Length: 156
Image 1 (cartoon, helix red, strand yellow):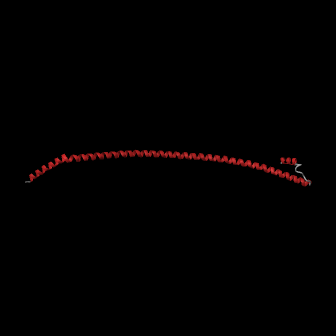
Image 2 (cartoon, one colour; image 1 turned 45 degrees about the vertical axis):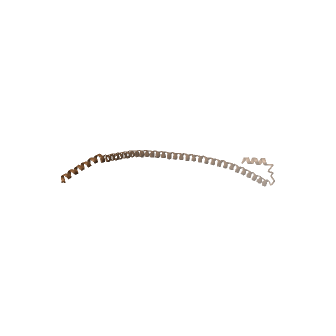
């Protein structure tokens, strides 16, 4: 055979191969490529959607954090105010209690002063009786002169 015949036969075989490939091989490859392209497009769309949802979730988290910070600050301020109120009330109660203790001490001191004066009056009366006994050198009867002694006690 000649080179021309071989070339023509090779061209015919090539055209048959191209036709067979176009009819039977190419359609499944094209559908597989189309399916893969649609899956990739769906994946990209899902990724974009997830990205936007993540962004929205991050914004919500930031808002919640800001809200919790303000609530915490408010609670801390409220706790400090309550502590100041409790401290002031405790100071007032301590001052009142101190005033009560001072008043009770004054009353006690006054009572002790009165008792000391009574004891001193009795001692002065006893000394006066002893002095009178020594001056008179007589025995003075305390029972007889009790009225005189009680008057002396009240005068001092």
